[in-house]
Length: 268
Image (cartoon, rainbow, N blue to C red; front, top):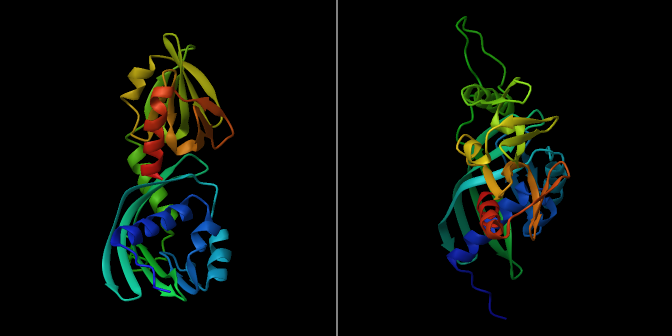
C-alpha cells in the first residue's frame, strides 16, 4: 500500500489542532496522534514526559480550572524529508486565575511528526516561554534568589499592568466599584442602566452597554443587543446560546452567532 502523502498545510493544521486540544482540556484527544515513545519537554522543570502514558498522567495534573484563550498563532514547516516533518511556531496564552487575575505567556514550540507503521505520529514537542524570567537573579547584596515561579511572576506583571486598567462603575446607591476587566463576567442592558455581573456579585450602574463597550478590552464581545460578555468565561456555544464557566446560559443574537464562533475559534 502506498504511503499517504501529507501536504505542508495538512501537517501545520494537525499541529494547530493538537495544541488547541491540549489547551481546551481535551488531553486524551491531544494524546491520540502521539507515538508510544513520545517525548514532551515544557517550560517548567516538572513538564518532562517520556511516553504517551506518562504525558497523559502528567498533563492530567496540570491545573484545569483556568479558562485559556489562544491568540497570535503562527506555525511553519521547518524541515521535511521522507518520513519526518518538523514544525516550529509560537502563540500567546491568556488565562484567568481563580481570583480573576489574568496572565499571559508567549510560547514558542518545535513539533516533530514522523510516520510509524504507516501512520502519522507526533514524536516530540519542545515548548518554552519567550517571556520566562531568569531562573536565577542576584539581589543588591549579591545573594542568589530562589527560582522564580513563572505563574506567580506573570500574575505579578499583569497585576501591575492591570493597576492602570481598572474600570470605574458608579452604582445606583452612588457607591464606586473599581474592577479589573478580568473581574467581570458580563454586562446586561437594563434601560438607561447596565447590570454588571462579576463572579461574586452584581450591581446596577448608570450607562449604556455601548459606553462600556469602548472601555473594555478585546476579550469582551457584544453577543446580543443586551449582553456584553467577557469571552474568557465562555465555556461553550450552541445555536444562539452561550454557556459560561459558572453554568449560566446567555442568549446569542442570530446576527452575532457566526461572528462569535469565529472569534472563539480564532482565539482558542
